[in-house]
Image (cartoon, rainbow over all chains, first blue to last red; front, side):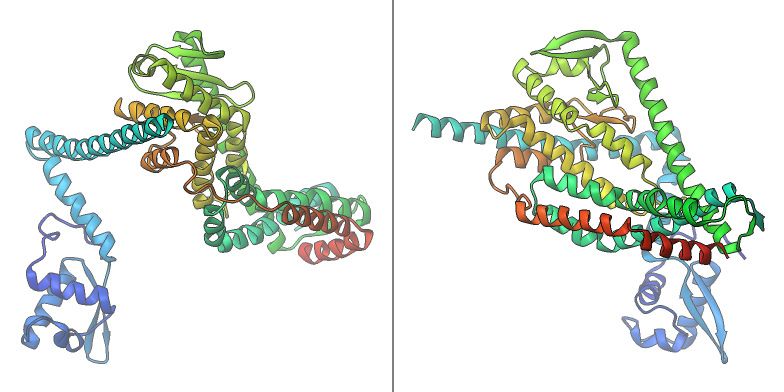
Length: 139
Length: 321
């Protein structure tokens, strides 16, 4: 069944993020394969519940192999980051008008200040080069 | 499916075009990373030519295979006025060939139409004047742009914002840059790139080569505009930075070259202009070019032998059935 991301689904807890990192790194895994790769030892049921929660959030696919579920990521890390950023931006834009404007103005400022800094630097280098050429000519 | 003589010729030509094009495009795609590295060591002008030739190679070779081999061998060796059964593979290949050529034709025609519309819109408000000895059309707009528009009779179109912002010397440098594009017929080359089909219908596949060519063409125009003069280099670099300060340029039509190009490699262009001799790149040695030309000529003569046409006809028969 196709599930759509809600804003809540896009938020991952610390353990969920750790499990997703493992699955993105290793590919398809069952609970037993995930457990030793976690940063701290956790109970089988905790890891199983976490994987089940990620499956219900639509982040994982699963298939049954023998008697255990094997989980695999539905999205690459990049696709997930894109969705998360999209949700974040959409949250601002669908909020009160002022928050959308605030976001856009922050983005424009960030891009603009980067460009201005680059152009300042380029102008400084042109000035220096011109001075250098003048000095050479005088010699 | 039984198809009459002339329709079978069309079908075979389209199928052959698609198959040859797909094969050559796949090879070009494979060698593209190495070609980009080689182009990086060449002079921009030569690199631009090399990358353009590589981008156009699939279409050119496929067109040669059709016009130079398939059509003559069919017309010469196929019994006239006969209907024959044509296989599904041939029909599918012909269908893909038709889709491929139609797609690129529509893309090119739309670009030509947009380019014409753009020029007509500019002309409505533009005032013709001269910067140095070059005729220039000044459009009373606040958006910063300095472009060469048109394919056959290309014209320099500049916004009033740019004219107001640049001193005379920098304007002249910018004009020289655009004139270098005009002399290289870069807008016509853009049209050829648009006319060259992608790898498959709906799949461009060779965009990396197109982007690299556009970048080298910009660098080549910079080099030609400054002609090795370090003062002219600095003036053009200043003009680029000053136009960049005016803000983002409006979106361009596909058959237009702009002083700022897409603006992504501004820092690199300025760096090249500041240190023009730091990495001049290499030209292909004359013996290499001579050998390549001789090999191409020999291959062409060998391909046009009657025995080759017999073999091609055999292949066409296999493709048909």
